[in-house]
Length: 548
Image 1 (spheres, helix red, strand yellow):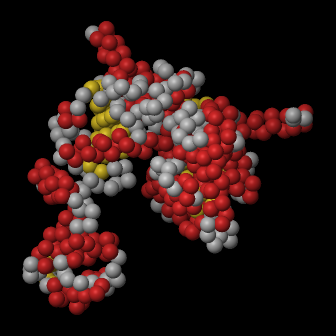
Image 2 (cartoon, rainbow, N blue to C red):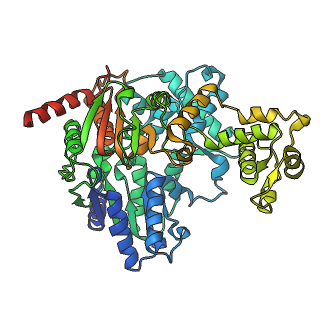
Image 3 (cartoon, rainbow, N blue to C red):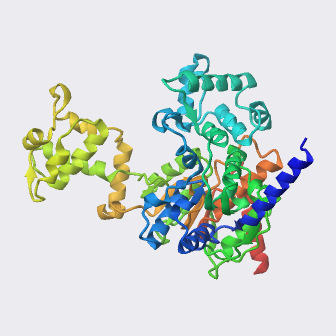
């Protein structure tokens, strides 16, 4: 129980936060990040505030990199290094730890390693069916981000994959590995934030800018509260309707309610027109306790279309860029297969293309070489680069290429003698073919041939206009056309037993539907467990027909 003095101190702190904080509420496409960069960041730089006196924190690296790029473009006297406080929250905290405490390269555990740790550390758990990020460790991470006991976080979950005993055994195994699994103790991202609250004396700043504020967890907000004590001006931007990381402990109420500040609301989207706006608002109706955000759409109409099958979508007839979005990774994998069957040229949101053109070029070059033909400089460099990536032999080629004329041609003997084209145990030259063809399956070859026929090799050297990924991965981005795949709604096994799960699902589909600039394409929205797109599309059509 707080004393009167403590209550007064807390009240004074809240008043201080309110006076120096501006909260920017912006629906999709209204320019939240644009406002933070063009008006707030650049405005303070024009006033003479140095980059070192500001911090820009975001949930993703993409927003941070965009802010730095635009700032250095507008103020060329500054370099990227000057904006060293422009980071994700985890990276920002990490820079204040000494390598004597931990070396991030050697002692930081990310999500990809957690499952492997459990499977290799405890034989009793090794036979379990693990996801990319183990379910129990996900709940354990969520408990720390929510600042509650693991047992409490376990109770709150509607779906129980593990028993309570197995849940705690995995936690115990994981924590034991962090302490004793290496020469130095390991630390994970949640540990890092927890230690930052207690151990880091954050510097005084003139400006603190936080983007995507709805995505931070209570634990992360504790860091922000601590930083705020030494900051003169704070800007927060976000949209609670796009708070789609509830599964990881994110709580939009910290942005909307718990962190005091004056509100600024952006009222006009620059992204989409009437049709998409109308449809997205129907989805938004079911999002309860949402901050009021009435906003205008653009003057263009746009459209919303529905399809039963992937092959019905007219990818080749509609110009512009594309997102093809699934709810979870399993549905994304299915979408990739459908896209390959349809002969589409695409990549994922991490810029990984559906087909490696360099691999094809390397195979062709090796085929020429093994048949006694010569290679030009470019062909030989491509082949060497790909071989090095696959097998990591110690080639001597890099220095060699820099001293060679572009018109020079090379046979196998010359490349072997000059560049180190050698194999262990003097293996036959044919073995390089198998190195090049590693993970190069017949269906990939067929897919590439179809791509060559449809697009031509010149187009395949360009970036694809189609990106396939999850809704979560593309939040904050936009394309001319967006396909939403209704199958694979997570968690389908829940069947949305309670209102909170329904609201969270509406937020995900609302976020996905508002990525489109021109046309929203709904694929299989009548799927058995799909929610809410099937019903909402019918409402949209009915209301549209009523107006007509």
